[in-house]
Length: 288
Length: 162
Image 1 (cartoon, rainbow over the protein chains, first blue to last red):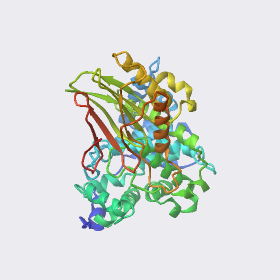
Image 2 (cartoon, chains in turn brown, yellow):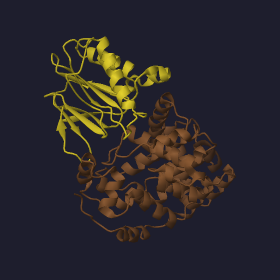
Image 3 (cartoon, each protein chain N blue to C red):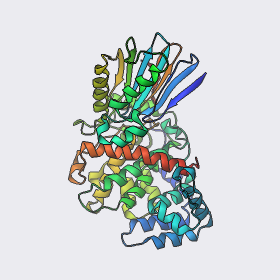
Image 4 (cartoon, each protein chain N blue to C red):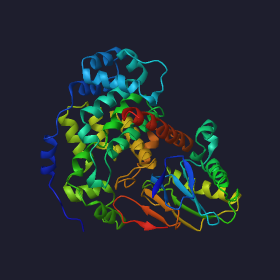
């Protein structure tokens, strides 16, 4: 029997203490959720942030991208990296303390959350291309980066609980890891992430992707294609390998076939893309 | 003691008796461990997908990625270390091939990986003497070259032997 370790009110209070995103990260996320924007708007936001400009130029010129000629202008850098990568860099830097902390509550090492989120983002971007309705791959990527941010909050309250939750799942005491989190804390990481997303004033589409990525059928109908893409992206990321105790401890929603057309061969290709692109992006961001 | 760490789609072998051959966080991937008692060599390949026909170009850069090319590549490397090129006398063990909670097995690439690995091994008349496959948890695999002992670990669970 699992005993409650903290109350929902304590978690909500902790969320209110999380620093706001940088203005440039916030603006880039808003932009990525709007359908009518062009690259020059992304460039303008980056140019107004000296630290972000330096970081974007450093990454595009890193060994991982193997460019022959040095990129010296932010226009070329953004054009080469793409909007989603730039938004990911801004977000990763702005909320670095959250994304790169050790996930002690999930027995996960430092940066495990960021690594899982980056894999999910790449997978969601590829899966978005198989959506039965038009869906922006850039938006799916950004939603993937953010989808599990609630775990960074809950981790501090879940220390030494992993084995209890896994025993509870194996013994059918709880149905999945989300239910285990709710037993212990009165809130799960999707709801905690949603509360943080509201506090950060993220666009509604991103709030929904965070809140419903493990129960996509409950998402508002206008966002269901996006949420299913992130749902599947998260699962693909776990299949590709994850070092936290909740890995693979969630259910696949079979209704994804109503929204995403994904054959087993396409699934294999998505996994291939995730592993390849993850290595490139990860090495560039860590300056390897 | 040093570690030979293998990433996704990588393969390698060691006959340094102080070494540990290791791969982290197998989800649906399968670790194929080949042990040659005669030369006291341990090899491992981290297989990510069943068949190379899905992307033949990838085979050139990372043959270990696929079951049908990864096992021959590992056998070839081990043959350069004095082992039998077809793996005669080898001890084979398998781990990984996990899946998400899904009663319909739609996303069960782990099972397809395990089957493809066994199919490739059969071509060499090889088969596993021990395996820890399937289920819904990730596995990190560590093999001691000197003892051949395989330790499996997964976050939130106690370590176990294969």
